[in-house]
Amino acid sequence: MEELVKQIIEKQKAFFLTHQTKSVAFRIEQLKRLRIAIGAYEERLYEALWEDLHKSRFEAYATEIGLVMAEIRLHLRKLHSWSKPEKVPTNQMIHFWSASRIIKEPYGRVLIIAPWNYPFQLLINPLVGAISAGNCITLKASEYTPATARVMSDMIREYFPPEYIACLGGGRESNQALLAQQWDYIFFTGSPMVGKIVMESAARHLTPVSLELGGKSPCIVDRDANLEVAANRIVWGKFLNAGQTCIAPDYLFVHYEAENHLMELIKDRIRKFFGEDPHESPDFPRIATIPKTKRLAAFLDNAKIITGGQVLTRERYIAPTVIKAEASDSIMQEEIFGPILPVMTFHDRSEVINYVNAHPKPLAFYYFSTNRENQEEMLLKTSSGGGCINEVIMHIANDKMPFGGVGNSGMGRYHGKFSFDVFSHQRAIMKKSLFADIPLRYPPYGNKWKLIKMVIR
Image (cartoon, rainbow, N blue to C red):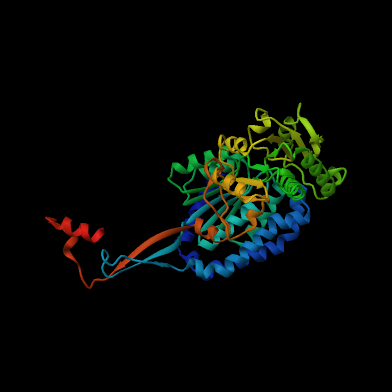
């Protein structure tokens, strides 16, 4: 594997130095080719996502294929304007007869490592930005979703030469081989624990990174919230992809006066969305692997179950589950990443604010309330990568906003133009006239400092 990775890197280095990828026309052609490739492999992708995660066609398109197609469409429409050099003002009092601009140039050889929960979207969506910015790319698909990884590898191999875009599978050995090499940029999506390993490996070569991580994203329902709407949106967002979503509500804080009513509504919505037996629902996905299923099932030992709790380990099935929790419970100590929603109550918003701020900054933050002052207070006194008021998850679908974490939940941002930006180096260039060469800046300085002080002030 190490030799294969080295060969890919050398070929991509040579291809990048032909400067073909810097042509906007070339980039547009490759984006169109990617769109054609996805269309050609769409049916195989549906089948693979069903095999790996039991995703319905609706969910597979809405959360994976459709998001990528929309991203390609946006980049095709905007790439000419995004890639143009940006003229910026120049202080002519200091920089006589000068002009300044920012050139958006590709980094070069980019490594993109994706997780298993959205195996297509989280690999190919960053790829769109890397193509758009003019890079050569190596993709690393997750070994935990092998069917989808095979389809993506076949798709990339058929439509793109490996010296431009390569797609690798494999497990830990592949990751180690890839991270041992020097890249010009690394884009990683996964857990904070693995993110630290990626960052440590990148630091050896001073390689810049984007880390799209996760964490325990809180969802708070205040007593003045519209509970009917809150129940709909929380149940949908929490159990989307069986809870295997980095921005899913990880735990629920509900005002004690609203708790009983909200719990009844949540139980009702689970039945409406997935039927009396969610195991039979074509719309409820499965956990990626048996070990991950066992990890989640362990959280239910001695748990106070409000609804759900059924586990079929061999089928990688855990029912949509809601439990009563305490801050000291094991489920509150790590990101859940599954269809289990712990519920805690609060009396005063300060309790929630203090709890959230006492823990690592989450990737998302959700607050349900009809009071604007309370909404602004919660945003002012907490921090997160992003979030919603009276909604969950949907901020990710606005391509005008950046998506990314802060602190323990990650660094860097992408989606839309931010994807183009994250894979582009902002190169600052000043061009100066030869018409005159003012001697003020040259030694001997003498009393010139008085004059320069007047000019710079």
